[in-house]
Structures are given as C-alpha cells and as structure tokens.
Length: 518
Image (cartoon, rainbow, N blue to C red; front, side, top):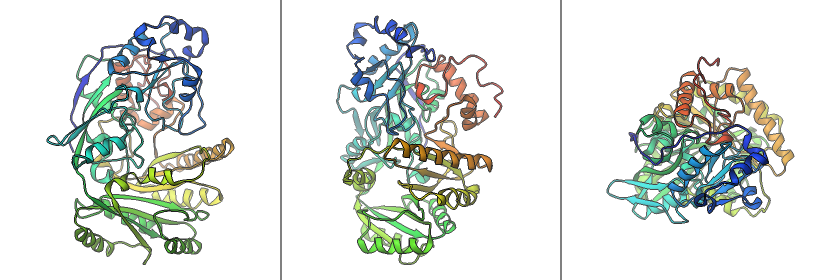
C-alpha cells in the first residue's frame, strides 16, 4: 500500500529544552509562576497527577516526577503549551503519553510537562470512518480497539495491527506497530495516508511525514492519522502447530510468508517454550491438548509452535485452504489445534486473556524486543535458546518468534530494521513480581544483548532503549542516523520533545551526528 505524504501542519513553533534544568525546584517554579491562564486551567501540578506519570508499564523505571500534567482539549492547546515551553526560562521538556505502555521510561518527562493525550477531544470519540474512501481518521489519543470497533460497524478494518489493542494510535505510529499481519500488509506505519501533528516547521515537507512515522516522538506530536481500511472478514480459523525442531518451524514460517494473498495464512507468528515452561490454564486448548503438549515437552526439552490464522467468510473455503496448507508443513503429526472465533475476538485475543487472569498481583515487565537477521537465527538458537536460557528455570512470560519481510517496510521512515529481506521478531515478554525479579530479567536481557554483540549478530531493538548517543547512532546506522539528526535539528533543534527516549539530551548543534564513528 503506497503511503501518502500529506501533512497538515498545525503550528509554527521553535521548541527548546535545557537538559536537566527543569528538575531543580527553583527553575521549575520560575516558569510555573508565570503560566498563562489558558494553559494554567489545563495544567495540574499536584503530586497525585504527577505520580501517575512518573512510571510506565515496565513498572520499575521511575524518573523524577513531571513538574505538571497537561490535559489538552484541542490540538491548539498543545500548540499553546509548546509556545510557552519555548518562551519559559529555562525551557522545559514535554512528553506526549498515550496509554502508558512504554517499558523503559520512554514517555516520561522528568521535571517537565507530561502531555496527557487521553484528554484530547475532551473525552469525545474522535474516530470518523469513510466507507467510500476506505479510510478512518483517528485522533492520536484513540485506542486501536475503538478504531477497530468503529470500522467494523462499516464492515471494514485496518490492515495491520499490534497484538494488544489497548494502545493509542499516536503511540504505535511513533514506533512501527507490528503483529502477525506485517508480512502481508507491512507495519501500521506503512498504512497511513495523512497525519496531523504539532511540529515546528511551516513547510509541508515529506521528510517530516516519513520521519514522524517510527520517529519515537522526537519530531512532533501526532494528533490525527488517516489509516487505510479493507473489508473485514466475518470469522477467523486460529491455529497452533507444534514443532520440536526450530529449523522446521522457521522453514514453515518463511514458506507461509512467501505465499501471495489469498493463498496462505493471513497471520503468522510463533512462540518458543523453554524446557521449564509448561502449557496450562489456557483457554485455547482442551485438557487433552494440554496433556499432549506437555508430554511432548517432557520428551523434547525446548519446543516451538507456529501460530497462524485464516480469515474467512465462507467456512468451506477456509477448510479447503487449511487442508491444502497442512500438507506442505512439517509440524509434529497430530499436534495441530484450532479455534474458530469472530474477527474481533481474534484481534482482541491478548486483552481477553489478560482479563481472564484472576491474580491481583501487579506485574512488572522487563521486556526485550529484537529484530534478528534471518542469516543468524541458527547462531541465536544455539547461544540463547539452547544456551543462556537453558541455564535459568524461572522465566515467565511468552517468547515470540516470527519472520517479517523487509520489502513491506518503507526505508524512508525513521523505523529501523535489519538489512536482510527476511528478518525475525524475537520478543522476550518477561513478567516479574518483584523489583528483585525485574533486576534478574534485566541482567538476562543484557546477557542476550552481550552475546549478540560478541558474536557479531547485528540485532535491532524494537521499542529501543539506549542511554548513549553512540549506541543510538549504531542502532540507526550511519546513513539513517545522519538523516534523523538533520530532522531533529530542523523540527526540534533544542530537544524539547520526548526526553525519556534519551536520544537527544542537549541542543542539536550544526555538527551533531557528522562523521559518527559507529
């Protein structure tokens, strides 16, 4: 799907940030004491509001409190805030926050202003579906579950998804937005026609449009996106096929993502089950299926499953497609399980599982998400799945593993992936019950990253977390890093936006990024 380049610029503003200055109480009060009335009415500097915006879904990263929380009703309110931020002495950082699902403090604004995107629109639904144009206009603060339900009322659906739908449009478009449909439709950022954003240029430059998509919130605040739609299917045949050999799994996954629409699956993912992990309590499997899977686990140590889905309106056509595909796959005979669900139930599957959990324990999420070149997956298997992770027996949370096609990504965008046509998403979605456990998982993540670095496996972090400029430059690569620096210099030259990413912590000068040593 071709991506449009229309940008509706809402604001002319130069933004600024003086690193660390806003954290000092005296400096904070210097601008809090002179807040214009139209901003002050929407600014909450109370400790209760600030505390909620001092942590995120990861549960451990705790920056200094924001000096205040801003609750805009309109995009013009955001524009007014940024104008004031520029004029303040000292200027202060601003971070847009949607549903708070970053895990390493990426959406925090210590000492500055947390921009509560949920308040945008005054609580009104800002989703408008065009059946004739096959698109939906959605506010940046809107949740994808609400976008889906609005589109379904017209028999339509966005093409690409995240696994979890209770994330905001602006949040996922600032990263990429990935799930098992990416091999066919590209990430969510590849399905956007238009953007409205709060930025700092008077020009309708296509570089800003592409820069903001996957731009980690560094170049502007997304307030509206126009997203491509397609006809929605009625139902989904949801399958899981089990393997004892990673080579068979990846060959089958790569075969499935090579098939043209509509001959193959409409969704392809996969998971790794380590030696100590058992299947239990899932609503997907029958008790007999659970016994069969765990018996295989006892015989084969680490096992894997391919997760696939076929969207359909005609049950007989779905049956025939699945029958034909099963003959070409190399799963363990007899170990294939399926459910038949509505399209909404399938896309909302992760939320439904979370809702069914009875535990009231607040879990922490020390996640690590990687993009892994296809050429190194065997090395990764030996060193990580068969090495590092075999030495621990307490990991909790799924390990995702599934392939993507590079040609579905637009390399003009800021989002960065490995330089191979096929690469894998590897997601370690650990859960921890205590801060001590979180530290253990964090050390495990660092060991995995260290193994990749020592063995020359050039992984890219998805939802990246780095603390040094050199690491960020390595992440993007020389060409894309230089371009990103140029965009930052043009649209946020003094690094006001999204300080929690720790990419640009001081003013971006004219030499920033030049001749980087990677």
